[in-house]
Image (spheres, rainbow, N blue to C red):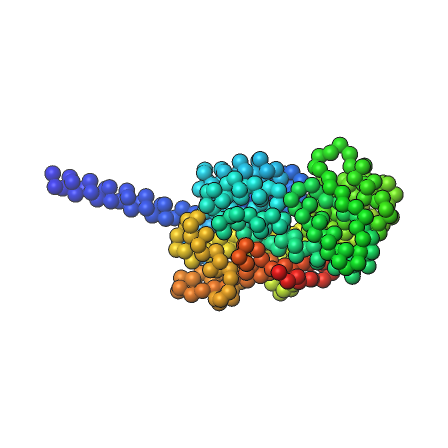
Length: 405
């Protein structure tokens, strides 16, 4: 009888130990909400690659708490309703410890208010720049690794005024939180520099024609039309502007930094036209990241948000390590502790060192491949911008601008 009880105890103990070890070995899941269809589909695949590359790098450095990081990818369709549904699945079904995304501010905000904040899950957007995100009542659950529009507006105004010497422009913008906020901010910044904005023209997605918006854009004879838009419909509007006989130039915000724009509008119509997008002025780090991406996925496209997505995933992993638990609470409590000074500065090239320092109980200050990841009290980061242009159908970097917060 005693032998039977002992044998049963041994069997049960083995089962429990096996279950515990299996559970401990399960990957830590981080959700990624990125557009692979819809208006921002041009950006989705490379941004997803940024997340996957970050997970690979953390895992190669030994993982976190003896476990690997796994990225759960879900498509937002660049649509608020679809995105909220996808976010609920990440939280309720996939049981992720944090979420990166979305790309569009008009998608990020409803996800934050409907899912992330109520569920107490940290959400870090690598691309949403609307100032409305700054003022969300979010209990410190919403962060960004991309600078907000209040910083891009003066950077873009500088390009228009000092690089291109424009005095009069019109502004076409996508009718959402991103487009409206940046358009108004840009108008104020450009007028402060002595420029004139002839018109602010909103557009909605999936219209049968944009002839009316195109005509309004060129009324008043502006020297250039500023496109605060996304590639799919932004290119359609530009084509219709050209078809109306416009001979002036174009200027772009970050949402139009895609080679597809030149292809769909025509190289000769966009040649030597300028834009801005978040970018890291640290050439050594930017080059390292590009080569690193190339080795894994092939040539990195000249599109934004790949590096900011990478940093978002790395920061979440480091926060888990700092908190000593793969939980949403650990991410929430420790995200700033691994991103902000003071602490030993570390970057993506020495993640093994970063994890070792954390294990030793030391503070770290992660410097991102996208630039500084020092969060202010609103979860925002400083602003560094790449000035870029179309040259023979390709995107070329001109210079960098840093804007103070």
